[in-house]
Length: 104
Ligand code: SF4
Ligand code: SF4
Image 1 (cartoon, helix red, strand yellow):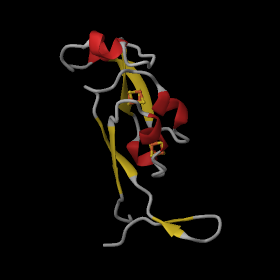
Image 2 (tube, helix red, strand yellow; image 1 turned 90 degrees about the vertical axis):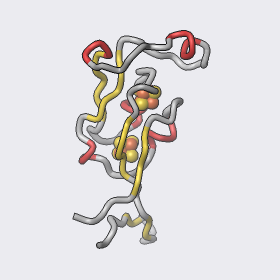
Image 3 (cartoon, helix red, strand yellow; image 1 turned 30 degrees about the vertical axis):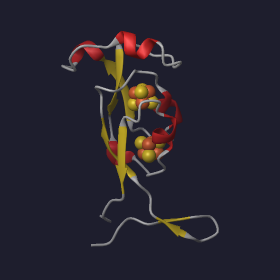
Image 4 (cartoon, helix red, strand yellow; image 1 turned 135 degrees about the vertical axis):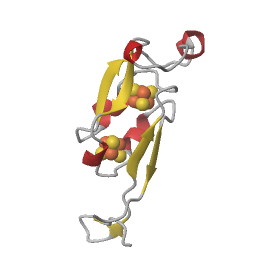
């Protein structure tokens, strides 16, 4: 089985790593991934609509990042991901996992 391969402007090959999971129990709803993603992968949703357990507001309030306790990020269309991993680099809580994917 072959893996999806990217090609740089100079013609070098690289292996994109596509988003696989987003741990909503760690997400603080800051929206960084949404603003950074060049595709239509993410969507903010109401935390109350999900069963995520207790919200540890004290833990998150002193971490230096703005957060929105009412919202949490969701994967709206992970199949639109191009594997750039920009979301992982900006996420303050390391909520996502990425991996190479087999070619369709
Ligand atoms: S890896 Fe890139 S394209 Fe995929 S979800 Fe993250 S920012 Fe968007
Ligand atoms: S960057 Fe991380 S913490 Fe912020 S909304 Fe996205 S997944 Fe949640």
